[in-house]
Amino acid sequence: MANFIEEIIEKDLADGTVDEIVTRFPPEPNGYLHIGHAKAICLNTGLAKKYGGKCNLRFDDTNPVKEDEEFVNSIIDDVKWLGWEGDVYYASDYFAVMYDCAVKLIRAGKAYVDDISPEEMKERRGTLTEPGQESAHRNRPIEESLRLFEDMRAGRVGDGELVLRAKIDMASPNINMRDPIIYRVVHATHHRQGDKWCVYPMYDFAHPIEDAVEGVTHSVCTLEFEDHRPLYDWVLDNCWTGRKPHQYEFARLNIARTIMSKRYLKKLVDEGVVDGWDDPRMPTLAGFRRRGYTPSAIREFCDRIGVAKANSEVETGQLESCMRDELNETAPRIMAVLEPLELVITNRPDGWSEEVTLDNHPQRPEAGVRTYAMGKRMYIERSDFSLDPPPKYYRLKPDGAVRLKGGYIVRYVGCDVAADGSVGRVYAEIVEGTMSGGDSPVKAKGVIHWVNADDCAAVTAVRYDYLLLPADGKTDFSERLNPSSKTVYNAFAEPAVRGGKVFQFMRQGYFTEDCRHAGVFNETVGLKDTFNAKK
Ligand code: ATP
Ligand code: MG
Image 1 (tube, protein in one colour):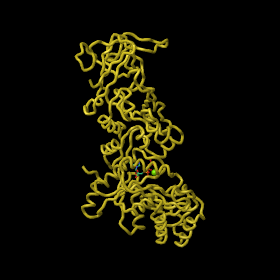
Image 2: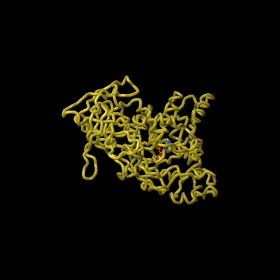
Image 3: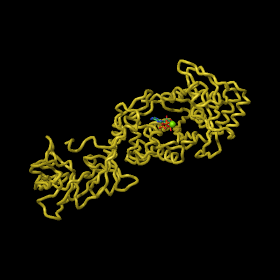
Image 4: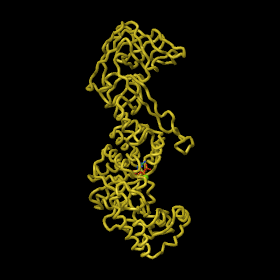
């Protein structure tokens, strides 16, 4: 089924309003992209693809103070990673065009130079029920505004001393139309333009011109800009003679307990709350990538949540299930013990070992099998043994038996308990004739994973939780930081872990090797179910 923007495009193509579709994704390079941006990227690239058009990546780099080359590069990487192909554009390349448009507006009596400060601007703007107050400079002679604007451009005016305002309507019911500022003075070095400019256009003035220059047909943005659309159209009506783009708004993506603002994410990075923009806990695309998310899973997520006209919030679970569904198909299974407890087999001699055969993927026989040897000393998960088990505990316990995945059933013999009550080592015996795959004389209700202590790989496994605790009435993110958003395990895995990057650690979750640190495996997403629960 077509979404509402597709319906508009199909109508425009059918009645000849447009003959080719051009969309754009216009980030400001003031931070790394987050998962919310993925929705805008998928939407805009998806439209271009579906209708045989193109999607421009355009940097909305009109604010020299907050923007940076590092962000430009990371954004290009991330957008390509998500599957975008096309040309890269920079709004700053159109500064001369925008400047000319501004001069044209002044000449037409549709813009004037004012000395209003941001505070006064707010005070005099009026409210939804009261009109704004006109500036004393609103009707200053055109020649005077031209001269002052030239002074602004030439660097003869300090930051904030003068602004250029569109002359629209101080009584407009839409506050955005009450003589908005369209140019301001900023003495700062621009990441691409250097010190060439000291006047910079405001978003609402720049954006429609950027779209028009590039021949964008459908300029898709988030709902907050709905009230800005009349200004978007006003700028084009008064500045642009060629074919005009049109703005359409869709609902932004919000995910529960997930920060979707570059500005705040930057704060987390700058204050060292996280280890950089690509910290696996960050909802940035770089963070998701490092955690092991794939572009296809993110695209699938954007597809499943759809495009709507009303804001809503989705659960992280929806994103996770896209990732899990994919990894369930693709990830080979191996065993890894995150919290090792030593298990000693009492009825086998020192140096004993016996090979077992394990499926690489239970539902995909074509993924093949591997062999691995059980040994006299193995590690099992600490939580798979209990001296004082709760009801229905089908793992190892006193008087109990459990199957070691793919191998024998073992029966409890005893354990070493330290002075503090913790279990140091467990002893068990193999129940003869119970090797997996054969006709076992006895059955075990539970199956647990294990590694051979003499033949395993030490790896670091890292599990992540939400960065934020539930809101509970708190409005400031910094009061909601989750102290246990990251848990590090010194784990042991089958040696097969050295032969790949992405695995299902059986009964634990899907893990992907960290792109910065070999031997560190980040939990990409947990398992919905353990194989015990499925049995
Ligand atoms: P931020 O506050 O994180 O900087 P922004 O909207 O200011 O977000 P831009 O770089 O201007 O960031 O965004 C580029 C594009 O991505 C815009 O078209 C914007 O509408 C879209 N976008 C940003 N956040 C979301 C979101 N949560 N859901 C969908 N689209 C989004
Ligand atoms: Mg922004």
